[in-house]
Image 1 (tube, rainbow, N blue to C red):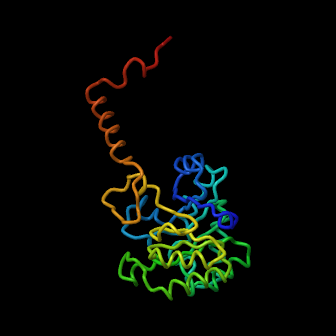
Image 2 (image 1 turned 30 degrees about the vertical axis):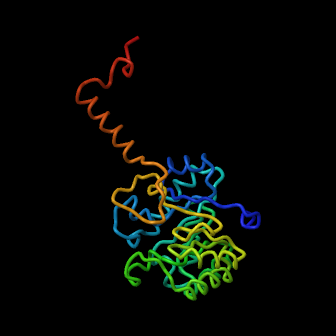
Image 3 (image 1 turned 90 degrees about the vertical axis):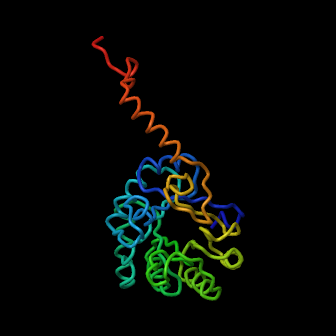
Length: 255
């Protein structure tokens, strides 16, 4: 909230384990999202739908253990908050208590306003997620830009009024995202929603060039770690095959 009031942009990235969370925290990222994208990035599925609550707790606990300063937000996975507000509160409580994270994120606006209000009333910080909702991929026919302005505005307003402290806007036209950002008092975090949002979030593996075979208009590859890692791995394999590793400098001696 202070960042929005000060006009300071927020940078958020994903992490799913201790090593990456530690690196992100040390480099000054504002927030770390333990996303249900782990279903694709870590588990290798085509969607996020198979991720369980236990999966999220397991990965979030590792991330929290590494972090000293960044805000840690954990996704509520598919069907962990859809049955009822009571179910959502119980599962959000588990995520916070068992992982040590600060906040949860759930997909939805108008249709989840009552649930957001329930969590907020129980002092569970909630980040909402509107626009493209990956957990709804089966009903919306794939990963598409969401262009229905009134639906986007209604969802964002409903989430904010229900008590969300921030809203992710995914795959939303820049002009609509800018209008939502200007209207709301809470921060908007864009992913494929243009530069006018109060902050941005990307999947770390995507922006580091680690994800094979994935291209998206909204992802900028800031480096190509896949190529660099591949070169190092091939050098190691060749060194072992040729007998040049380990050498005397990497060996122990009796004295």
